[in-house]
Image (cartoon, rainbow, N blue to C red; front, side, top):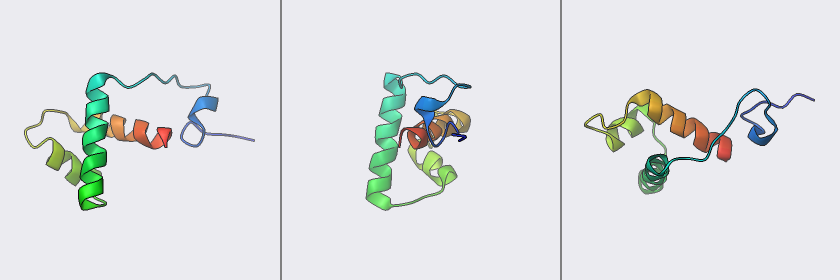
Length: 72
């Protein structure tokens, strides 16, 4: 049976995972708060809303969202 890193990150042998940094934890808290308040949004709109001055580049934001998805 094949299990991918998205479905079962703890079983993945091709990637290593690390705990989130303090900055990443703050970002994920902001993401969760924004989604609770206004519901679903595209990742682009969410990024633009949370980081209107470019404090975080889109690729870094997408990595955090990916980590959140893998963590459930």
